[in-house]
Length: 266
Image (cartoon, rainbow, N blue to C red; front, side, top):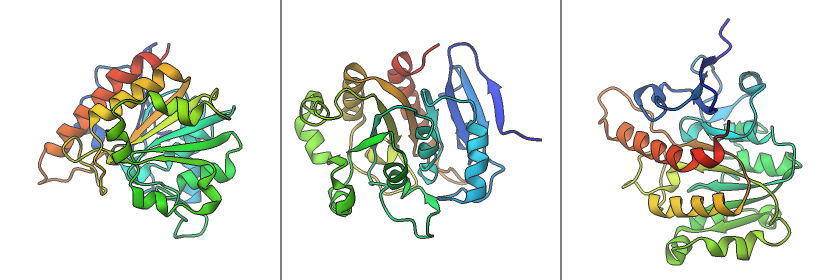
């Protein structure tokens, strides 16, 4: 029986790789790092939406793993997996989301979890999630956030981020108040990045990798980081250019080099 977990890990882990589409098999960034491989390629009911049976399978495969660490969760179609990681957090926290979209939409199929609704689900049902900070989200998507959620959402559009150039004002103006002392969980969808930097399966923003790295460094210095997850792989198909694989591999490696000293602990 396949439990979905292949352990290729040494004492310094965990970097977790959740493999839904085989895309990580074409990349190299993880090969030189201690890691834990979770095979999800046998699952159905997972692409974009996560039905009840699939949700149970994912929970089983993540059982026993802590929210701490660095988790790679495949393409943006599986961003809802962040909900399962944050479900493991047992203390108050702030969700930091790098995403071109808000992921606060209503699911098109009732209560079925989706890649576009998972933040809504976290804010509705996770008592420990006190607020969400959306970084690099398109202004139009932020304007569409329902009034019910606006008191628990802070959004920074790409133009604001590029104008400021530094990230120190973030703590001073947004997190030093009611939730300033809380730890953070960071979820990154690489569709927030410009196509000059990254190629994903979704429409993308205009953030530079330089800006993202500056923000992440500031967050690492000023807040306790519980864990980080990363999605946004481009599903490569035969006949496609190798450029999407190359860019994704490079960006993922840069995330590891930046985050592993603070987020990956023995």
